[in-house]
Image 1 (tube, rainbow, N blue to C red):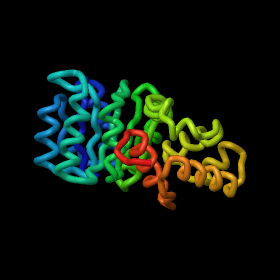
Image 2 (image 1 turned 30 degrees about the vertical axis):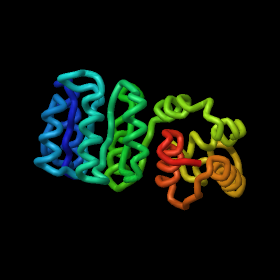
Image 3 (image 1 turned 180 degrees about the vertical axis):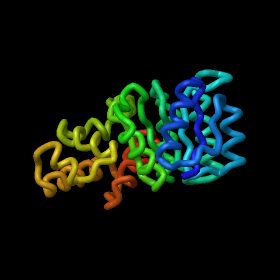
Length: 218
């Protein structure tokens, strides 16, 4: 894959470049600031962008803002966010735009190269990869919303796993349920949230997060 990498710390940027190259991917640009990222995405049109949230010149949410702008210009551009921070507002917008091909990993929770490379491949192929702590932060923001409050504790647990991109089979294995029981829970979740169910796990994630972000009505 052709990759644009945005990371302001030189050693980490260089290390990620070496890792990606060792796995057969081409680094078409490795940059350290928001303006450089915007220029690289426009020039190279990569297969995927790996982006830190906080980049110069603002060191706030520059990376995510540039990624969102790039996806508006090129819907479906795969973006894998790799950060130490959860920027809730723009993260929710990124996930809930309906185009798929997004991921959000926390740097200190990526335990090995295989985990990172699996996430890269999933996002590049149109999937969704979310660190559970990111999902917790996004869901917690709307914990008092009335429709979400209608969910049972078990439904909220299933919802969090759905938002991580887990299939019904994976949720069943994790919770020691049958797939039929998980399917019943997911149907209840969508009914209470006013959302149509889908067989596509990624679309389920996007639908739930879009609703929680207020971009879809119940």
